Length: 288
Image (cartoon, rainbow, N blue to C red):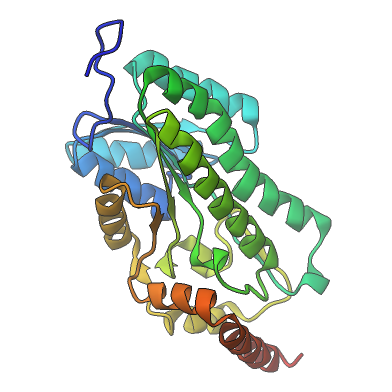
């Protein structure tokens, strides 16, 4: 299919595609960038830590892929719009936007500050909104595109001790479902990633820009996460992109977390009881 200007106007999966990945310097974002490059896409990695994003892009290039890195704070709508415009101007297309940048904010609500809430909302939710606002009209104009937002299994569960994280990820899930319906009218695709526990910096206490208030000793916290058998980020990226290629609406890995998703829908009282039990255990470890 060709556009009026003679340029191909169809989504590429993934060879020859152009993809922008926010939060691309580490964790899931970096893993998605590596996997996209392995599949033949040109990848633009954007992150608040621009030097790390450029270093990751350099590693991809050294391995034979095509990548570039950029500094981007997704809280800045003007900067997000400018980067999207720049990528389109230089590559004449944007097949994929991976709205992946996010932070972990946790602790009991009684210990949180308004700044904790604001940063969670500004990064995890408004960062996604800024990406959509910058990309959506342009993808409609080019006649194709796939927006992939990173939410979390936290979107389906009662996230005691991580209320800002759960609240914002629930919002991303809702936004993604609405966009998928609207996008179909214009030939656009929308998917939402809902990872279970993935081995990323968030497991170390929120990531470089996240925070956990008055919680547990980091060693105990890490041991608790290990019980959930974290999936390697590169394995997650490989499986997630397989599902993106199939235009799956909601993408959940590791696969066993899909059972929890079903239980949250059909047995919410049972899941809430489990959450209360876990909260009691953690508060006991803290001596609360």
